[in-house]
Length: 312
Ligand SMILES: [Fe+2]
Image 1 (cartoon, rainbow, N blue to C red):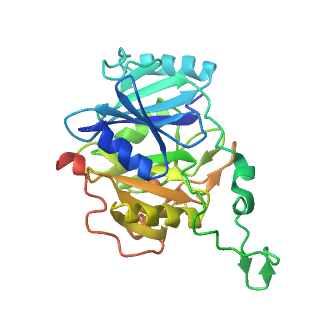
Image 2: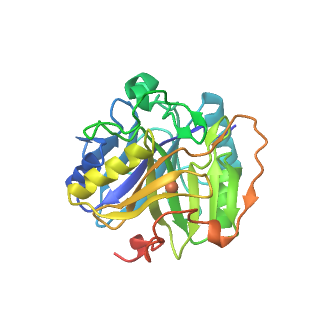
Image 3: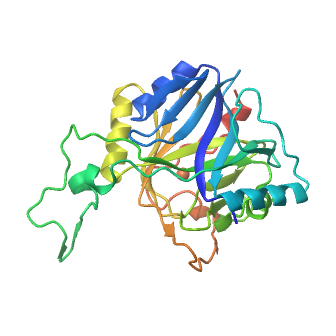
């Protein structure tokens, strides 16, 4: 029994409206609720980010969903594992179990399923399967591939987060032993990728070594590579900073483009991530450092792995 889905991430920010404006420009739905800034995906009834008033940008909490029986078992495991069950914090008075992970970051567990992605294939039309012509193999017969310039592009769901941590192994221990996640791949004590039982993207929580905790990026799934790049391009046209992309990761295989947020954090747009089916005997790989970031793409920016939560 384990957590079965990523619900949302809570982030402290010095100015909620600035955050809502930024995520709105990223094609996400934004609104204020009970003094908190809420960010969701168009047509999908699940909060994805919650912006909590703070003095500076800082990872506040990560919220996971599970089944009723999973909830009871996780509670039992936490209590028996010496993890103190806390009251919901005043600034985020929400249901479920509240604990702190080994880095002091709040983790919230509640009984919840993931909401379906909006519209499914129907909403995407020709873009749903992204048919591709390859040498001698034509999936598109008489059809044009390039979408219209004004095609609507929106992130479809929060796929994963990458957290900074001073101790990757200690944090893996918490996430696997207490929450039932599994390691998909790792690069020594530098970076680790974890997935959920029951069918999961290659990674839902990733961990990168740093001098302290923090949120490296929250990553949103796009329909395909066109939608990633169109969304990034439109954000640049609105004055936002492209950070790194377009490229493809080695570990997880996803296409990526990263944008800077107003506080030097990152948001990632991804597509085509590897999938680990329920019960699949996935062999966790140990990768060399050179494969930790990408297969191809522009040169890695110098400050890609700077933990700005320790700087600002
Ligand atoms: Fe990512």
